[in-house]
Length: 114
Image (cartoon, rainbow, N blue to C red; front, side):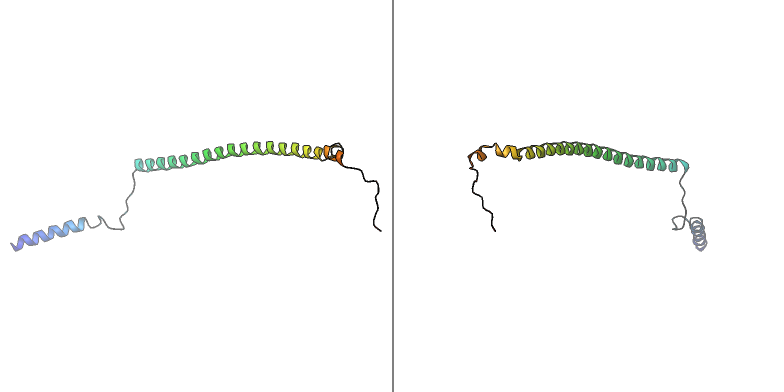
């Protein structure tokens, strides 16, 4: 019985020595060529999707900016037309011929302060 226990201990010791680097923190594991290739393909795919979303977002913002620039140009043209109309309405000839000016009496006796 003592011999059997000694043999079992020796077998356990051999197994322990044989498997001692399994699961150790310093053990290095390498990826195979297929796994590395798949990993690179996935990374390139993700980066491509990110690039496409950025390009799409930029182009949609360009359309919005273009629309706003067109609206701004139209509003500036309308503002210029309204300024011309306001100047026309304020002209001296228009004021003299208006109905309010026709009801006014001209001043004949003007004295200036000394």
